[in-house]
Image (cartoon, rainbow, N blue to C red; front, side, top):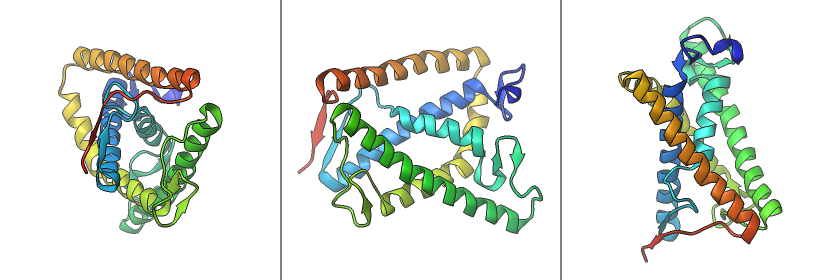
Length: 211
């Protein structure tokens, strides 16, 4: 990975500040998607235990996904392109492989994080038990499928456009946005973890219930 961080501060052709801002957007979209899902399912829209509307895990996921696999039709493994010839069938196969890998990672990742919170803090952070085909209380086939499809669409269609749009912002402005917003998001997430470790429950700042 280090050899792909060039003098102009790029990772696989995308400037680091731009990539970080996109990750923050992913964290914000994660906050919105989770809340919309909860609003439909249980009629609740809340803070997701954080002060800011950014769920750190989604941002980290976008960063790792891009660095390791790139985008679906141009899928690679770090710097090694999967199925190097750019034929239509190869692009389709890359998308299928991308889907399978992402599906497995989300399924295992969501379950692992949920179980980790339960074991480490004694907190049952979320509950999918009333969803068909759930696996433990922390993941399910329908939600994992929906997340996977949504991420593939975002990485293939939205990510390249977002890169071009954010690159239009002056480089110094991008740098300070990435730095300052990143500090606030990390601090917010640390507050969540520390509060959970000390009190045995995650903080709740606000909640809107629609019966």
